[in-house]
Each structure stands twice: as C-alpha cells, then as structure tokens.
Length: 194
Image 1: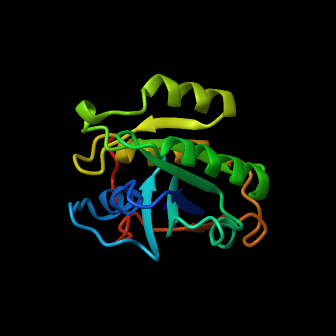
Image 2: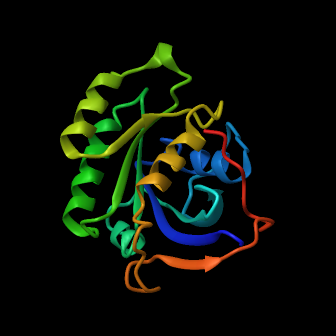
C-alpha cells in the first residue's frame, strides 16, 4: 500500500540576511549561493518520508523579514522556523518573532529556533547555550545549522516533521493538514538521512 502524504504549511521567519532562503534552498534543492538577493516571498515544497506509511509534505513559505506582513504568512501555519545568524545581533529579533507567533499564531504551531551559519564558529556572537536555554524556557525546538555546508539542515526539518500532529489529522482546511495516498515515486520526494 502506498504511504499517505500529510501536507503541512511551514513559514520561515527572521530578519533579513540571516539565511532563511539559503536554508530552504539547501533543504529543497541541495543548493547554496554566497550571493543571494533579498527575498520578497517564495513558496517551495519538499516531501520527506517520516516512516514506511507516512510522508510529510512541507509547503514552505519563505517570507520577507517585515513584521507587518508576517501575519499574512503564518495564518493557518502548522510550523514555523525562526532563523537568526550566530554571528550577528539577530538573536533578539528572533526572540521577538517568537513572541509574535505566540501572540498571533495557532497555539498548536510547532516552532523551531535555528541558529544559522554554524560554520562561522570564529565569528560567533550568540553562545549556543544562551539560545538553547531560551528555546527550553519557551518550549521550542532548537538547533544550529549551516546552509553553506548543509550541516543540520535536513535534521531540523525532520525534527519538525516528527512533532507535527499526525495521529489525528483534521479535515482539510480546518488545520492546514491535508492527507492523501501518494506513490513513493513522487517527484518532489527526497530521502532524508538524518
């Protein structure tokens, strides 16, 4: 029997130039470029196998870093990835994105805090322990990753996939979860060795 595919809306949030688009392009296309223009908004999908019977299809909204537009993107989102750059003072901004989601998003949203550019350890400004403690206090998922090297990128999305409410998905439209049986050969499916 073909595995079912459950679709979930995921939004990427964070300040400009922290690497949101680079993370998602590494995940979806396994690509990286040092020279990327600022994103206005982009929509990409990626399907990963959760287990033998279920695939997770991420419907990823890569957003511009303007708070005024954010509610448009995270309406009906099942998950959010909030990105900061470990080499910049973008961590405080990431914390304010968390507060924004806690205030306006669905209370069951899965939130992952990601410290990007972990390959630049010599330029680190944000101690990992500080971010880990904040994530623990706020009951968020947390990891560091590098869009440049790919380190931790697949793992962060798989961590989110494992936390999504698969046990009793609601009807399409009520929670953003859509379930369908999909053949394993689906073109966008990608094996994740996390």
